[in-house]
Length: 248
Image (tube, rainbow, N blue to C red):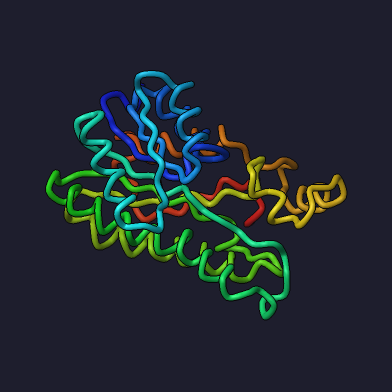
């Protein structure tokens, strides 16, 4: 029960890593707001988690929807202690000069601008409370880029740098900011990164991971619960790799 009494928002909580984080948070005693642009997925996850979860249809690139996340946490559970910026998007592997502009704009909006919008809404609230934990889900792509995913790699490198900048600026207010860098995992984005989810492509990806498996939602949930708990009260500005040794 390391998160007992805490209230958290998890964006992109309707599937994948976000769902794994939600489940772990509730198991550790937290109350959670599942924010996802897929309203049905958010509702389904919240229903499975019971009375300690509420769902919200939210697009993290829209200011009004991001503001609604905080208001939902206040209305449903009386406040907010933890923000997990998990929502993310990738692009199919392709030469960097061939990605269309609309896809590039979507990557920057979801992977980057959404963190800015969330900070605009939630950091003032945390400053007033003199405490809070923010966790940004980055990627090993921001540390050890794969070819033909250049603009996705760049967006996740931005997340890591933003995390460090936020951490140093917000530390005097009692706000901790950390990141997780998962390797490719068993999530809806896996096929996007590989181009095609084939046994051959999986084997090629797994060959780059020393521990020989993909990251799982449970792996991310376990790490997130620790970094967002009071046990990690001296940890800020860290981008923890959950990658089976890929970045060594």
